[in-house]
Image (cartoon, rainbow over all chains, first blue to last red; front, side):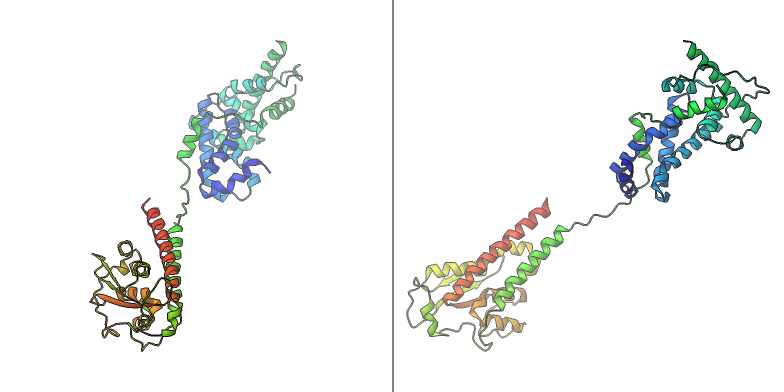
Length: 174
Length: 231
């Protein structure tokens, strides 16, 4: 039972205060999800606003309140992907990819550092990495969602990991 | 670090989280909120006020009408009804023993002028009490209640020949229902001026006082209602 459950009923009745409370409770999570996909904060916020608008419109159709966060996250990801597709992100196709060795960054759990690293990733890398590692999509799903081949998805993921690992090593050296 | 460890590292750290949106973002969400299902708010208090006033009116009438009435055949200005009741009269009334009851002739003219002519035979105090009775804040009532806003010009004889309601005769026959009779007259559009002769025993004076209190309460309620309505 989370605190925002109480506002669902009022929001369904169209009460502005309840809608506002629901927004205040859920928007930060959505914005976090969106920010993982965009380097520009304004883009992330746009996606968040579209997601929240969709949520308020779809609210009467949502049966299970507990499922709302998961629904929101899925919707947010879709919103981000739609925007990325619209921009026709450049998918750098990498034929072969040398596996790097393990790095000494196991101790690195600095959330802020990881956050900034993720957001510094090139757009194509970041999208695939997000979908695969953080949302748990398969390569087939990613390929379908982004309109790319599975091979592209895999290579983008490898590139992303490579890029991140290199940066992580740099972090650990500092 | 293996790819799986890398994924896990990021997933654990960043999969869930919160980020504060700009304050302006809410306005953009609010602009696209679905239309609220407005429940029409029903104003209940005018109905409550009207109902309470109606109940008070009906209650007053009922109290007046349910007094034991004299026989309908009695004349309106029946003098010397009951010589026995003369003993119940207030001490202030020092009338002759021949006319056992106080005699009051109240004539109600046009509401526009609202002249209350009250010819009290000899008893000022009783006349004052009575004078209050047919008035009932008539001017205010006529402004507020269209039902009562009718000209009354009835020359009452014993009993009036062209009275449209039998109820009138019944009421008028009872001295205790004088006011009710007058208002019946006013409602009945009898085209003449009303002259009511009243013979008042002490019990009736008591009743008159009660009626006056009721009338004051009613006026109070009306003032409350109309002032609320105007706000």
